[in-house]
Amino acid sequence: MSDMFELTGKVVVVTGSGRGLGKAIALGVGTAGASVVVCSRTLSEAQATSDEIAAAGSPSLAVQVDTGDRASCESLIAATVDHFGKLDVMVNNAGIDIIEPAEDVTEDAWDQVLNINLKGYFNCSQLAARQMITQGTGGSIVNNSSIAGRVGIAGLSAYAAAKGGVDQLTKVQAVEWAPKGIRVNAFAPGYFENVMSGATEEHRRPEKRSQVLAFTPMGRRGLPDELVGPVVFFASDASSYVTGAVLYVDGGYTAQ
Ligand SMILES: NC(=O)c1ccc[n+]([C@@H]2O[C@H](COP(=O)([O-])OP(=O)(O)OC[C@H]3O[C@@H](n4cnc5c(N)ncnc54)[C@H](O)[C@@H]3O)[C@@H](O)[C@H]2O)c1
Image (cartoon, rainbow, N blue to C red; front, side, top):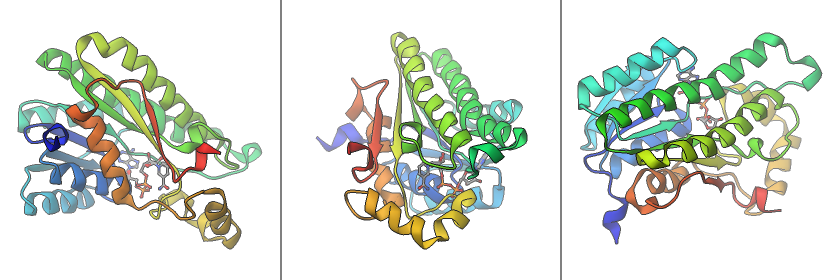
């Protein structure tokens, strides 16, 4: 039974894994046996996570990447294949958050958010899928979406548009790549203890903090480690007949 969650022998890339939720995911897939490529814009953070994974006994590589830049995504896939010889699982996690009333969002802010949170996911997925198709092995693509892709949360117009796009991208790619053995799924976190760097100001407000707890049926924020199970599920044979799914990991937020 436990074998179906096994990731030993699989090469997993987790974008934005130098800190936050991506770091917890990278450490978690490492514990499940995967060889892990840790990557983010800040190489020192990626290297520190990678060192932790290696110290715990799984092979790991740190790579600097800007997922908002196509050439940088290409270098990430090339470095992965150079080092580990293949790529089995792509976890798209790197993201930014800009909170502003819709009437104040600048074109620049809109472009930044859409470029990293949606186009970056597309670029990494497409490049990973091409590699999986070349290998002829199939694979799994796992997208970190958000409840903001489904429900309206004030201040998140660009972010929510990107995450809604991620949900649809997940479904279209799942349909297109199913015949090639590539599964594409998403998990959509609610509010987690790790607040995104662009949202710290907003989440310092006592009204926001109490609103989050009041709107979450489980009455608490998620712990970063609570994303490991969903990602290992999607990455492993445990989800061999699941594709195009969006799994809400939100303490019941979207069940209401
Ligand atoms: N924290 C939450 O409550 C929450 C809720 C829902 C969804 N999410 C999603 O989880 C993901 C991770 O968020 P987090 O809370 O860990 O945020 P965070 O700000 O703590 O960490 C983001 C990570 O992504 C990296 N990153 C950002 N832009 C990048 C780029 N262009 N190229 C490479 N790396 C880049 C950063 O360096 C950092 O390592 C995001 O996609 C976010 O939308 C978070």
